[in-house]
Amino acid sequence: MPDSTTVEILAEVHRGVGRIQLNRPKALNALTTDMVAAIDRVLASWEGTPLSAVVLASTSTKAFCAGGDIRTIREYSLAGDAEASERFFATEYRLNARIAEYPVPVVSLIDGLCMGGGLGLSVHGGFRVVTERAVLAMPETGIGFFPDIGASYFLPRLPGAIGMYVGLTGHRLDAADALYTGLATHFVPADGLGAVADALADHPDDPVDVVLNRLAGRSPVAESGLAEVRGDVDRAFGAPTLGEIEKRLRHFDTPWAAAASAAQESASPQSLEITHALLARGRQRTLRECLDAELALARTTIRTPDFLEGVRAALVDKDRAPRWQRTSLGGGAPQA
Ligand code: QUE
Image 1 (tube, helix red, strand yellow):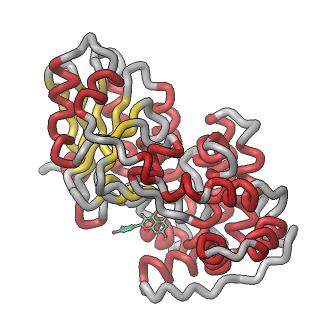
Image 2 (cartoon, rainbow, N blue to C red; image 1 turned 90 degrees about the vertical axis):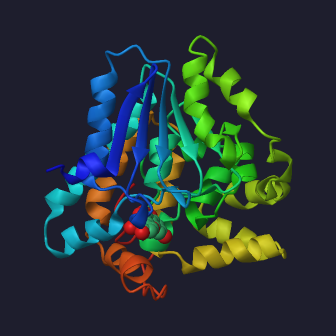
Image 3 (cartoon, helix red, strand yellow; image 1 turned 90 degrees about the horizontal axis):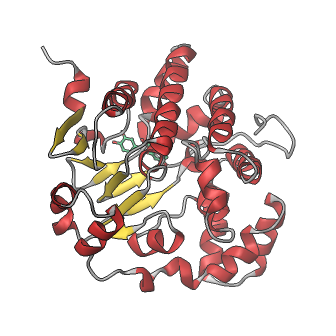
């Protein structure tokens, strides 16, 4: 009998291209420990194979990947099984590092939702293709967690203060925004996505960038809403402290600033503190150092009331009305 890993992750090598598909469509490909372990095993097993590329994709048109299976992590916490959660995060972050260091170009095809752990699979690879249906976000402050999966490495390296904005507010990026920030590298219309792996197989000696550009439609990057508010993003989110960011947002009398303020006000105060400190420090850290710091922080954060409450409100009861603990600055929040 096939186990769940053979069903939820499909993998094959076809004409010199490794192809991995996430196949848990009912959960928007939320990643379980078995799934990240299976992807890691597949990539490890291909390291001796001469491949022109590895393509990471989804069997669902709704989502590339909604993130980690955080509902199950909460259940582990409630059952007192911290080891099971730690196994998940350690395996996931090891996979993130493997993707970053992989000897073959990794090409992710992002069609639909891509949040949290989905960005961890894609952003560390060299090529991130988005379609007109792509929606990217790091929404963890809204569930009492923090941007992990190496986000403390890649967010501070986005232009200006965009990473701090995206990490603190959970702002959703469309394809144009993703291309503008560099989270995405190429645009291919959804109806052309099926041709990517074959095109890479047909032209193994062409640079991946050249192959992807041949499939590209008209790039929507000129329509980036984030580009339009970039000046205000940098002025507000470039502030040295969380309190100063909030103060600057209140002084901007614009719809964008009001929305950013509201997003921060609905997030977990503990998560905002952790995230601000983590992203500030991430600038000086290597990816591996970032992942190590995130693993230590994940261990403590998943035990906190805000995490249990945030996941309850977003994914269990779905009332979207979390009751956060009030943390004072420098108070009980785990150290980033
Ligand atoms: C923050 C998150 C996640 C989230 C929502 C957040 C996350 C995640 C899911 C999710 C969504 C749909 C599913 C599912 C999980 O939502 O990590 O199983 O069907 O996996 O605000 O970090």
